[in-house]
Image 1: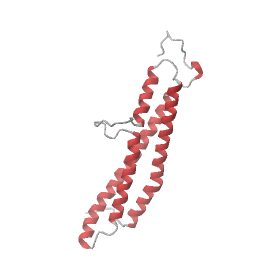
Image 2 (image 1 turned 90 degrees about the vertical axis):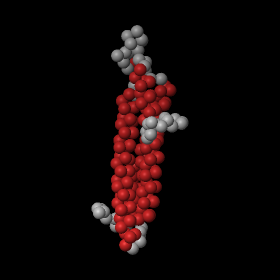
Image 3 (image 1 turned 180 degrees about the vertical axis):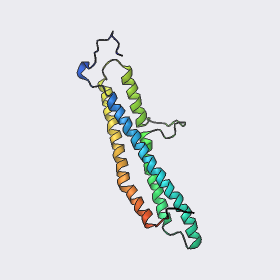
Image 4 (image 1 turned 180 degrees about the horizontal axis):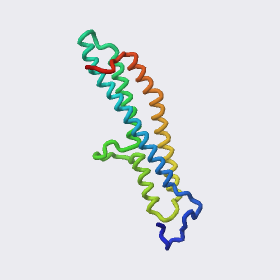
Length: 167
């Protein structure tokens, strides 16, 4: 509720309050993190199958192309981790030097704006715009990973003829 002692009325100054926009960017961050974690979990599942199938196959006649797929899985997981670490703090119990992650910066900006009865400052708006651009850039990186690297990994898995179930 606005402070009645302040000369600010809802919508005064013509400034748009970006709380809804910040919420939307935070939702995009969460959706991206959830998506990349689902992909990583699937890649880890294929790694487990590869290792089990590789042990059985190498006991019979040599490892084949499994090492190539395992190397691609490791590379893909590293790229996914890079995007995730830009978006959120992946190890909340361990303090990281340097700037906080995008999610934390957006949440902090939202709190700052919410606590003020006045319209957001030009500086707050500029910070939001920079953060929104960075979120868009990380989401674009994730889309590219999904379109290119995941597709390439899928092709490698198919070419290696890895069994779907390893006993």
